[in-house]
Structure formats: structure tokens, C-alpha cells
Amino acid sequence: MKLQIGQEAPDFTLPSHLGKDVTLSDLRGTNVVLAFFPLAFTPV
Image 1 (cartoon, one colour):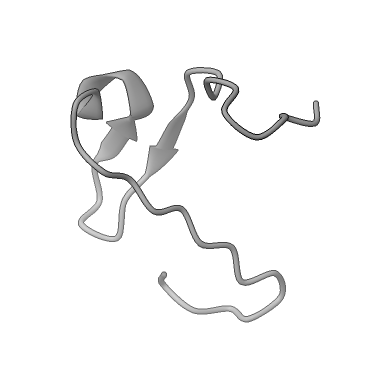
Image 2 (cartoon, rainbow, N blue to C red; image 1 turned 90 degrees about the vertical axis):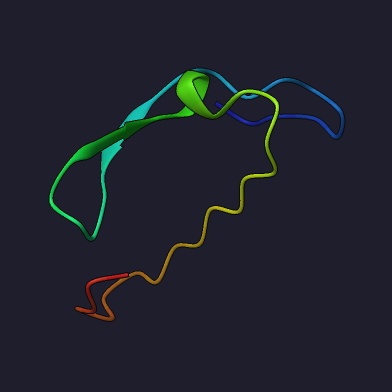
């Protein structure tokens, strides 16, 4: 799915580097930066 500028992101859950899951909707009202490093094999 491709988002347009200004479009709300769909809710999703990902594992954090601290070993627990983080859900986007739980962070509503805060700034969120999501970075992908494909094939970097780093914990980020």
C-alpha cells in the first residue's frame, strides 16, 4: 500500500529493540520516526 502525503498511516505493531511490541496507535499524539535498514542486520 502506498500512502500519499498527509494521509494517515495504517495501524501496525512491530517488535522494539527492547524486546516488546510497539503499536503505532499507542503512540498517537507523539512524533514517530520509522527507519528501515534493509539487509543491514542491525538491531535498529
